[in-house]
Image (cartoon, rainbow over all chains, first blue to last red; front, side, top):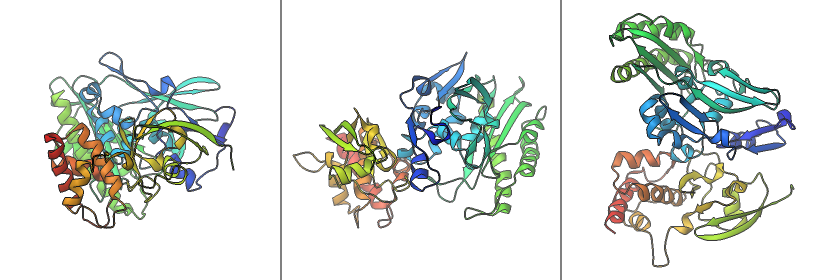
Length: 273
Length: 159
């Protein structure tokens, strides 16, 4: 990768990059298949260590893993709604993140779950919070010769839950018109919110970490009134464009609806956890 | 013309060797190099599922996999579904339920249904519809396909 610099790209599931290459989106000299690199294929999940998800692990390995199902149902939500079964057999969280699409479905869930990007390159390794990874549509924070090797998730806090959902015109197999991911951690009383994180898809040039929307929930009761306030704050940071999938106005409205729904489900999961 | 790569793989139970360019998809090689034209090209970008094949037990779109990636792997295509004794129960059910019209999507649906029913013969309608969401059919309206797959599941369970 280092040798070819920007003319080399990593191939994981190939569900984006092969289509982009065929469409002439960019020209490269070399595609490096990273699916046999052990660090990139690792999937280890435990209560003590949290989850390390290799960047080349396909979606099905996430949703078929019983430990992930128990610990990170919010990730399972995403893995099951990306593409169809064929795509889930190949597509990876790492690839979806590197593709840095504004509508990338995994990214709000990764932000809500406080994932970090483990990056290796000619200058050594570095760790980057996932919300700093996407810079512009199709542009990520990787430098020349750098590679995203894995995503690391902290163990879920006690009494926490997460959820991601999106709006699309059909039931499956579509690109988000808008999406929202949320995680909620409750106080010991299981009524008040200790902390929350909210992230949005398809309503800006990159996925958006709505830090204020999540932050204002701290100390509030986990109820409709609080979720409504967070949804309004999320709408305030949504800066969508109008395109063939939806108008800017519709997307701002959807951001509010989806944020509330994501929070409701995340809070319900937190109560059960 | 770039240099070709020699690939050894197993297709439908037989070891197969072929030469391909590294940019060629598995779909291109199946159809244009190996003359296995049962697998269809629809959209060639992972939306329609017409090119569905099973690689190492996993249902994938062959347009989105490079042929060189199949080195040492096992691939099942539509040509490997029927046995020498006759049609597979899924194929038989598709015929009896008239679950096809123009037929272009049919190989993809049958391969996708096989990948499902071999894991889970006990499926309900919701599961079938969810599983087949990555396969598009512009003729039938899907109902007959779904009924055929449910029926085939019953036959495979019994058989």
